[in-house]
Figure 1 (tube, rainbow, N blue to C red):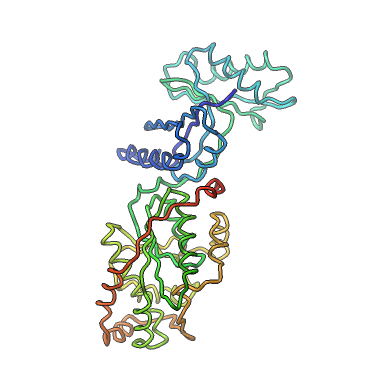
Figure 2 (cartoon, rainbow, N blue to C red):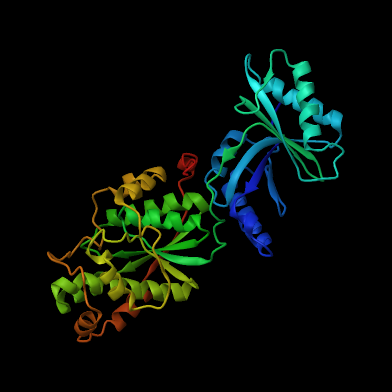
Length: 401
């Protein structure tokens, strides 16, 4: 029997109240974007469930796509059956006959959303179970650890049968938690931070600081490739490339060496905040992990954060480096991040950067030079790209969690 649809179950969306329909619509949009290469499919969404009608499209490839979409708790290839008992019995038998191998066991699990159906849950289980035992030679019941779990979902419009439950990516649909700017370097951490934020429903735009000739075009290509990987989740991501050479040189000349890293991060944060305002974002995302480097101590973050009142989200703040690397491997960004091309965060690194910088001191050093015109010039000269994934590689982006 060929499945004709895929039944999608919501995750945290199910806990939402009056706003649930907004979350469902965001998820429907994500599914439509991910399944754009399959023009025959149709997506139907209700408050409690979503269905992808296959209409002859490749179900295996569609399953791969669905595994990467945030907001989906689980999903099942399914068939739709009329609500009469005889149709239900025959469809269940045909489904099991197509799956059953000698010596396998089964059980029937019924969820009766429509309480008006003529049989209760036990009645459905017993009716289908007896029909299968009578008509499938050698099959046995095992309610604890069956080889085949036949799921029956009785709803007002129809009955749905499935035998496989596939875990989704979880989280919230992208865009349901607003928009934020991701400070995207060429390193391991920031792409992972972007991924984790997207899992919580955040729509991201990436901001990368580019300092030619100290950083090469290969460094820029590296960041574009990282953005392509993140774009596989949602179809496209906007990338803002900021010319940062002049500001870095001014910092090198005007700020004491041990405070230069602190000022560099402050200037990056100020520029990112300007981009956020222009793009109507609500927050800034960084790949900082507490204590990993000198600029990521609590004292450093306290001194750097002074330049903005915008929320700074740090999804990796308590994660160990090994855990971050594991996620980078899972989302296929690690190899790209390890390419040996420096970004502006790795040039002009002081020999002994301050790990506990003081706000009053960094403000004092910066007071001797007016960075504001340079910041505004950098914002005006930003190169903005809309990055889409490599289509031929997109199907390789499989289940992550």
